[in-house]
Image (cartoon, rainbow, N blue to C red; front, side):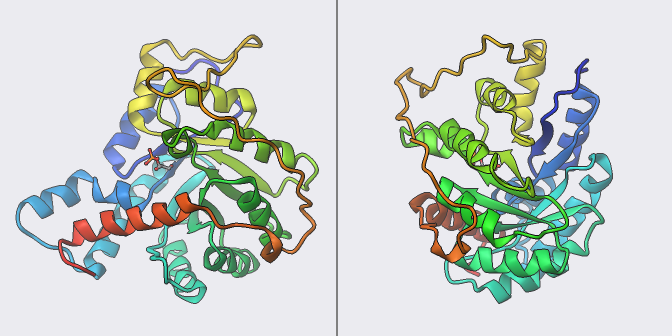
Amino acid sequence: MLANKPKTKILVDGGDPEETLRVKQLLGFVDGQTTNPSLIATNPQIQQRIASGHSLSSQEEKEEYRKIVQAISPLVGDAGVSIEVFADIGTTAEEMLAQGEEMFSWIPNAYIKYPCTREGLRAAEVSVARQIRVNMTLCFSQDQAAAVYAATRGSKEPVYVSPFVGRLDDRGENGMDVVKNIKKMYESGDGHVHVLAASIRHVDHLLASLATGVELTTVPAKVLVEWATKGFPMPNQDFSYKAVNASGERLKAIPYKELDLKRPWQSFDIAHELTTRGIQKFVADYRSTLRRSA
Ligand code: G3P
C-alpha cells in the first residue's frame, strides 16, 4: 500500500473493473479512472463474447460500455470515471453532444471525453454550460490546451485536459515538455482546467508527472504494478527526468510558447496530426470489437 498519498490524483487507465479493484487493493485507493474505445475493446468480457463468435451491434457495444463504467464507478474516488464518445473524423459537435449527454447519465461521477478538435471543443463549450463535466482528450500541443481553457471558461466544475505523453515520445518528441508547458501557461489562468497526464508508459513518466505537479495522471495498471514492485518511489528534489526513448536516444525538446488565454478559442492553431491519428485508432479499435464495418 502507498503510505503517503501524492498530491497528484492517480487514475487507472483501463477498461476492466476487476483490474481497477486489483489496483485499489495494491495502492489502497484509486482516485479515478479513464476509459476509451481502445481500452474497452480489450475488456476481458467483451473479448470473450467476440471469441465465442458473437458480434456486437453498436447498441450492444454501448450497453457493454455502460455496464463497465457502472461497475467501475463505485470503486473510485472524486476524480470520477472518464467515458469517451465514439467520434470519427466527420462526427459533428451535435452528434458528440448527444452521446455525451446520454453517457453522463450512466453514472453519478462521469467525465465525458471529447477530442481536442474544433467539433470536440464546440461540444465541450455547450457541455460545460449544461454542467456536464468534460475531459478533453488527445491533446498534443499547448495551443490545444489554450483552446480548451478558452472554450470552457466559466465552467463550474473542473475541466480536465489530457496531454498524451507517450505518443509524442513515440515520434521522438519530449511529451513531458507539453505537460510542463501547459502547466506553466495555466499559471496565469483561473485554475478551472486541471492537467491530466496521459499515455503514461513507464514509471519515469509517472514520477515526472508527479514532479511537474499535475493535478491528475492516468496510469495503466501494468505501470502501477511496476511502481509498487519498486516500493513506490517518489520524485525527490533532486529528481531529474531523463527524456530518452526506449533505445536511450534523447527526445527532442518542445519549446514553450507565449499564448494569451484570453483569446477566443477558435483563434488557436489546434490542428495536430496525432489527434487525427488518435481518433482513427480509436475508431479502428472500436470497429474491431463490432467485427463488422460500422
Ligand atoms: O490515457 C491515454 C491512453 O489510454 C493512451 O495511451 O499508451 O495508447 O498512448 P497509449
